[in-house]
Amino acid sequence: MRSIAQSAMRLWQNAERSRALLPIMAGICLACIGSAMLTTAVSLHLGKPGISPDVVQIVLTAYPVGFFVGCLVTRPAVAHYGHERTFVVILVLALLAAAGFVFTDFVPSWICFRLLGGMSMASLFVVCESWINLYAEQHNRGALFSLYMLTTAIAVLLGQLLVALVGPQSPHLFPVAAATVLLALVSKFIGGRWPVLPASPAEPEHASGPVKRLGPLALFRLAPVTVVAIFQGGITNMDIFVLTPIYGTQIGLSAATTVGLVTTISIAGMLAQTPVGWLSDRFERRLILLAQGLLSVTLCAAIAWLGNFSEPLLFVLFFLYGATALTIYPVAMAFGASQLHSRHMVGASGTLLLLYSIGNVATPGVSAGLMAHMGAPAMFLLLGGGAVLVTLAACYNLLRRPVSVPIVQAVEDRV
Image 1 (cartoon, rainbow, N blue to C red):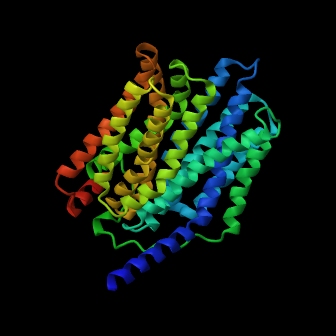
Image 2: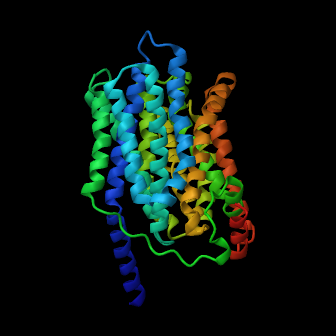
Image 3: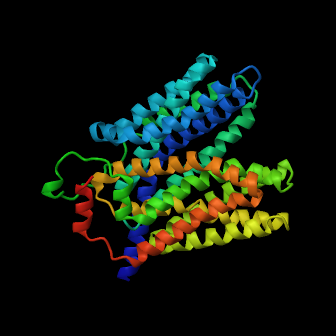
């Protein structure tokens, strides 16, 4: 009876914590919808004749550069102003970036707007992810983080649907996108204050100095599989959406079928977030990452070898791959957070997002080159290679001796 009562109490607490996140999820969802709309609208506008290719390239590069900068500058802002105030300031900056497209069509000025937009979105992610990790407990961190991932995935999908509803060539695309970001800012004030974060445990005397960023090497010492899996998440999330249309064209699929593959993998990732988050709160997260790595490798090999034989089979394989590979990121983040002191949560979130963005930016060109020289299935060489690294890192994390508190403190002291 006691165990049943404890389970019921834990379920009630998890439900309460999930409801407490709704104002935050509403803000990040609306901001992501606006960002997704702006990305598509800018790309459509840049495709018009008469715009210099050099300007197009710079405008398109400005967003990932801004994202990179946002990962670096958010930690000091949170340390000085706190999560909630920083969130509001970032939303204001995101609104200014979105409003710029409404008031001017001078394309070179869009470089600044995209730079500011990329920085704002990276900062929003750092604030939200670090706040959720601090707010969550060990038994519900995976579920809460999966709720966040599900929210951002739905937001991207809704952003594309809004573009279709407004009209790809409509002059109202930019105003609607800016209005969506404005709603994100308004929802922050309507939703009230965020729940209070739990009090941090007393910090050791030698750790009372200024909190610095945990770099990738320090994070690798504490949680190797997290560092590798986050980088792999950046590779997968960019390559699968950018290169699948090229893959479909090269293997002779129609445009509608190719769009269907992208939609299938998106839906699979969204549907799998909640059950995978639930599993990661009840089983060893390193084992789940090991299983995800092995399944991803197997599915990549199956798609590369069997993708040309049957379209229905290809859809099934893409669905299974999306459900597996697109859920590695939240499990890895939840495991990494469980290895860190709360005072390093914000800095670690920034570093991990930085690794994610590097994977985003660095690998599509490599994959495209492999596909040009080796054929369409080569797309899954890089994706499968990333999954192999996740598998090996999970094995290493499982086989090595557990990281003791003195080792954690020694790593933090070297930061």
